[in-house]
Amino acid sequence: MTISWTAYRRARRRSRQAWAVLIVLAVGLVSAVSWFFTAGQFAAAEPPVTGPSEALVLDPTWMKAVPPVRPVPEGSAAAALETLAVKGQAANDNYERTAFGQAWLDVDRNGCDTRNDILRRDLAGAQFTEGSRCRVAAGQFHEPYTGAVVTFTRGAESSKAVQIDHVVALGDAWQKGAQQLTPQQRQSLANDPLNLVAADGPANQEKSASDAADWLPKNKAFRCHYVARQISVKAAYALWVTPAEKDAMKRVLASCPQQQTVIPR
Image (tube, rainbow, N blue to C red; front, side, top):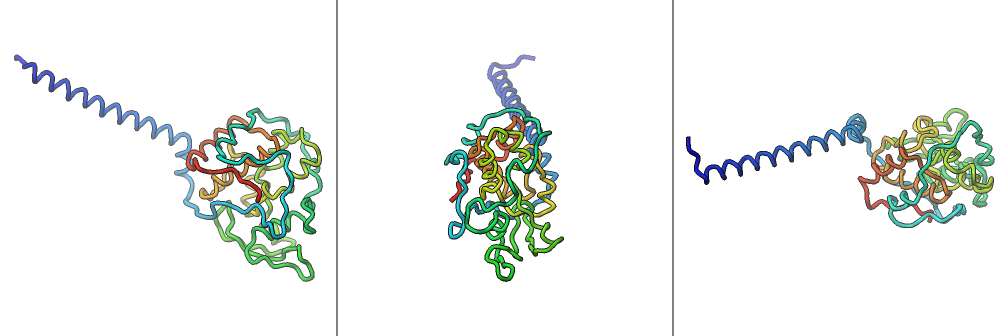
C-alpha cells in the first residue's frame, strides 16, 4: 500500500498532537499526586471551618507595646521568613517556665497583668469583677483557632475553657534561640501582646509547644495570619526556624502571597 506524502505528514502531525496531549495529562497527574502527598491529604481530611482571619495586637487606648529585641520587619511575611536563620532544635531538657519570668507580669506597666490585658483585648463585651478595672469576669469571642464562639466565665474550673496562648510557644522558643536572650528579653517575649492570643483551652492544650510543622489552627482562615505572626515574633526576638518548620510556613504563605508581617500598633 502506497501512502502519499501529504497523508504521511498529516499522520505525523496527529501523532505529535496526541503525544502532546498525553504529556500535558501526565504532568497534571504528577502535580496532583505531588499536591495530595504534601498539603492535599491534610486539606481533604480536615472538616471545613470558618472563623476570624486575624487577631488584634494592641488596643492603644489602654495597652502599650512591649519593646522587643529588634523591630518587626515591615513588608511581606514570606520575605521576613527568608531572613530567619534555619537550624536544628537545641536541647530542651533544661527548659523551665521560670526562665521567662513570673507568669503574667504587668510588663507594659498599664496597671493590669498580661493575662487580663489579653482577655480584655480579645473578648467582646468583657465584664470585670466588682471593684476591679482589670480582672475580667466574663465575655465572649469568636475564637481564632477553632472558629467557634466561646464564652469565658471566671471560675476555678470554668476559666480554663479560655487560655492565653503563646503564638510562638515558650518551649519552642527555648529550643530556637531564647536561651541566648537575657532574662529581661525572655520576660518581654512571654508577655508581648504580639505573641499572645486568647484561645480555646483544648485547642491550646493540643498545640502545646508545637511549631508550624506539627500544628496549625483548624480554622484555615486564620492560618496565614497565624504563621505571619509567628514569623514576626521570631524576627523580633532573634529566634530561628527548623527546615521542616520553614517548609510548613512557606506552604501556608503560598496561599496568601500578599500576607504582611504583623506589626504591634
